[in-house]
Image (cartoon, rainbow, N blue to C red; front, side, top):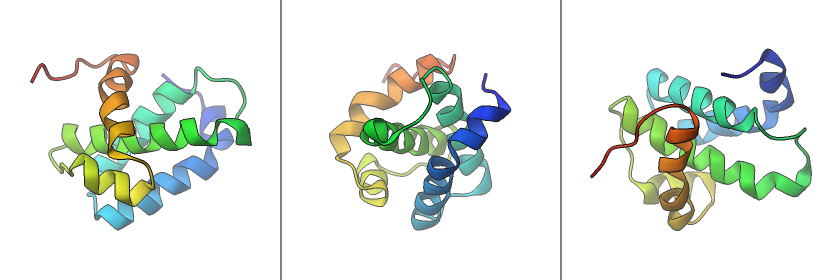
Length: 109
């Protein structure tokens, strides 16, 4: 679970989730799930700074992919990677671990 402070400290990244979700034309449920996934995993980190921007961008991408998958508004890893500006491999390597960190069970396929 995340704290209200996490929301404030990560405004930049939450805005990026919204911008990328707009590019992907994700529905409201997928956007909300992606935000929850992001905040659930990022709350364990220290205070945000520019040094971890690439890591947070990767979590944004994995959150959007997993959120869209969970809510049935699925987008491909390539589509999400293009919208966020990361490599598809970044999403492939992170999305299942992100689900586990958020207390969800990733699919076995």
